[in-house]
Amino acid sequence: MNVYVGSANPGFAPYAMEELRRRIRGTKLSGLAPGETFTFTSGDQDDESLLKDLRRKEPIFLRHLFPVEAENEVTGDREEMAARMKAYAATLGDRMKGSKVAIQVRKEQNSPFPFTSAEGRDELVPVVTELGGDAVAREADWIISVYASKKKLLMGCSLPRDNLSDWPGGAVRFRRDEGLISRAAFKLLEAERSFGIQLDRFSNALDLGAAPGGWTSVLLERGLKVTAVDPAEMDPSLELHPNLRHIRRNAADVSFAPGTFDLLVCDMSWDPHHTCRLVSELAPAITAGGSGIITLKLMYRKPLQSIDELVEDYSYYFDVRKVKQLFHNREEVTIWVKRK
Ligand SMILES: C[S@@+](CC[C@H](N)C(=O)[O-])C[C@H]1O[C@@H](n2cnc3c(N)ncnc32)[C@H](O)[C@@H]1O
Image (cartoon, rainbow, N blue to C red):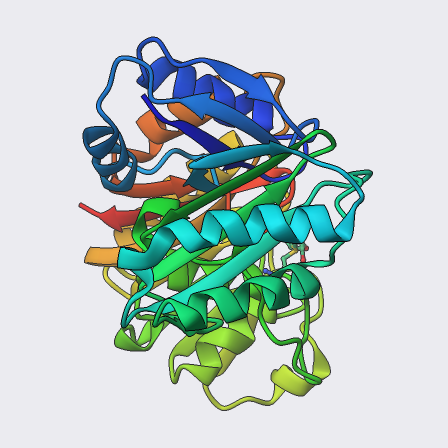
């Protein structure tokens, strides 16, 4: 039985823990950073089948995990902490030889751990190199994870796919371009990457609740024609774009010919059940096999129950492919559906 460190978006660890409790018989859970990180055990399940199962059907709120292979007490002593990390890394010989290795060091707020992420990494690079590994930032064969809580130094090494995300703690970072219209654009970029959707494969998109146009601008950049529906104004930089048609209306008051679009995206700040009804009414305008990427606001007290209900409602017109709280989602999750 292994112990794992799990991470979720701030405030959502209780839901990530609840999901794991439902899925892993006999798991033992324990909080680390309140609301964000925790440990869990593989319970009655063998580790390989647990990881396979988590990959096959990704939990909604668990963003990242890594196995704990070494555990020490945390102190503020630089030499001691460096020695602990190096002693662990030195045990990884067979995994390091000839491999690209990412080193991800994180610490909880108020942890006495004396290194920043970059400093912690720098301590370990010589060990990895000596063992015949190549320390890289991305696209690694192995990831060494170090997590310092207030009390514990937890370390492990795993394949990127077994962490659910190859970003430290699942915190996906995009470069903030000068011309970015809204931070909301990151949500669509992250959905594209996490769900493995190639947006440039679509040609005609319907964007509901599109203003000021972050998602629309991503779709236009990918070469799609976009029909944006929102009573609010779009960013002036988009208004004259030849591939954009802006309909300044409530999404409840529009209709389109059957099969007009092969992609629907929707990021309306609205009750998720209303949004679902509205999207369902517009479903005939989406071609069979077309995709939908929709954010579901979590405004009710029991998010897991709300999500179950919404998945059932979306299933009438759509196959639900993924539901995930992305790193860039705040009080919401993102759902990817395909038109039946
Ligand atoms: C979070 S913003 C969308 C941000 C956008 N995805 C972006 O990337 O810039 C939500 C938008 O939904 C719009 N909205 C809310 N209810 C709507 C409705 N019933 N019909 C159309 N738009 C709506 C609001 O006017 C607002 O502009």
